[in-house]
Length: 104
DNA sequence: ATTTTGACTTAAG
DNA sequence: GCTTAAGCCAAAA
Image (cartoon, rainbow, N blue to C red; front, side, top):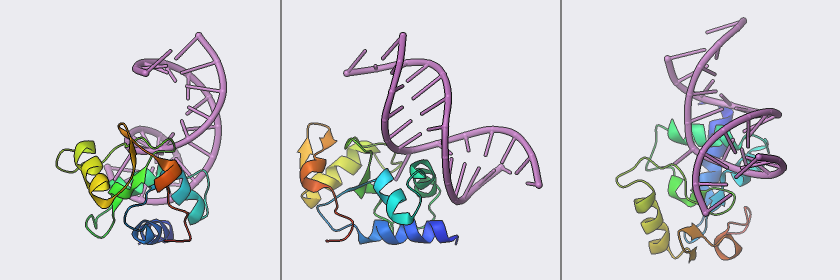
C-alpha cells in the first residue's frame, strides 16, 4: 500500500453517512491539492471496494462520475439518496451534503 | 526507468 | 449545455 492510497482510503472511510466529498477535497486532505485525478485513479484501481465508500465521492460541482458497480452512477445515486444525501436533480447538493472534512 | 492513462478541474469555443 | 484543450498527480503497464 502506498501512503497516498492509505490516506485516500482513510479519508474516504471517514466520510459520514449522508455526506459526500469531492475528489479535489480528498486530494487536498491527502496533502496534494492537485492530485484529484490520482484520487479517481486510485479509487478505480482500489482493490478493497466494500471497505471504501466510493459512492460518497463526487465531482467538484456535485456531479456523480465514474463508479463501475451494478448500474454505475444510477446505483451510486440511489445509495446516496438512501443515505440521506440531498440531491439537486442529478447532482448532489454540495451546499447541504458536502462533507466538512473534519466534522462528521 | 519511461510511458501511458485515468472515477478530475478549469477555461474556452 | 456540451465538446476540446491544457495542467497537475499518482498508479499501472
